[in-house]
Length: 623
Image (cartoon, rainbow, N blue to C red):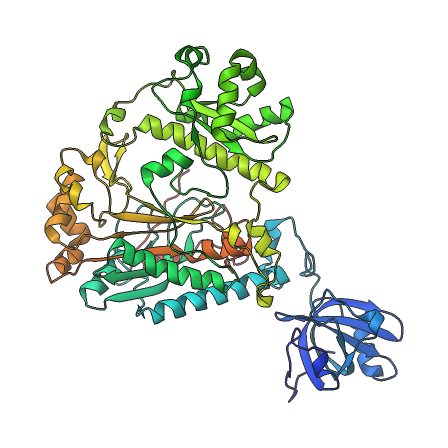
């Protein structure tokens, strides 16, 4: 028989009590984490989100409570009434914050029982993620998950307070809006009252936050829900949360200072100090130095080792002398067997027209001076793993290669990015095994932020990437497309090249990267209609099409629009980094699987014919 609470009220949470409360009468409520039956004594570890306290049911003191204790099982919901007492010296548990005390129970109420779950929240690791997501309400009880969301709350609160003190107003923007191109497919919502017409869920609040600047709000922010219908991966979900902000009359430095202040506050909430100002690098230099526009600074960058080879050596090694020859170094990997080296080959993306050389024994035999020089140039120590990546002369030159005047060519970018991707994959493979990263996110995850003892600053390395190309060349359409959204302002000095040399035009935009992840992206916006029309013209968008797609926004630009700019950072990714989680699914309460399914709610699913009829929709499935 289950009990009712009646007028009983909880006095403390399960993780609160300490030796100072010895002698107090208390009421605790929570889930039974573990039960140990020692005959006349039954011990229950009672758990809630704050922690665990040991409950002692003595048959002589509370025979009725002891009898109930014989019946309860893990995950039963119970209330324990009793007195705090100090444990015997030999029974103190130093691993528990409440380990010095226990509750001598006088009464036990069984508030609810439970079915046998497929796993226990007390388990440290559950291998089958699909089972975890199916029974998410059980999974979220696990201390690790509780900690993740406690930390997420603290980070969000600190960021919100920081932006508020910097003069930003929190304003909500619509969830049902108009479909506009922002880089991914929209989620469409049919309108019942306007047959054949659709709303779109926002990929971001982009246009609305710009309109807020036109409206004179000066500084806006929002912890915004965003929706993108795109393929999922560890750091991407269909619906996600971003820290979205916009401000009037800014320069890049203004945006950077605001972000660095609120991000430092958010990381401080997790006990991590970020050194400011963050370093900055141009897109071109980032590609040359790291082979990525979201570099991980915890590892050595790429090194130009072209001077280590003669032209004859390059010809023998079948390396294109017109393309970069770079080396990457993964520290402390140690001696690898031939099989281990061969197992690395699938990690290299050979489709990019690049090739790699990692057999330094063979290189040293055929070109000893080159091998020695390469290791000198990269500063390799004993046990460091060195790879050479270079251009493959067999890779054909594409017509678009001639259209990157004034910037890195597509073929150069291919070599650098192939090296950068390989660098990241090898780092993931060897970092934990050999400590190549030094202090990692796991250092922070394994610490307790509530105690303020984290020193994980070396684990997090932010960097601003600036001067991105304004356009990208689309081989499929043989046309230039915006590398960012079409409201990004170009550098004023490059405006004259919009139509004549689009490859040389730099965007007045910026990304913030950390540990190989893009945390955020932003730009100074176009605030004049004539400039916006020039951008549309350079993209081949007619006035008619522009008005159809962005009419209300273009109209707004004619009503005294101030210069403005902003940025959006992924809150989920920030929390993922600070918790050391392997994917966003660990820091989003109810995520989708890689196949875009909510296993707990069983979504998506079919709807009734009546619902479709009301929306004037007929479903036609492919046979």
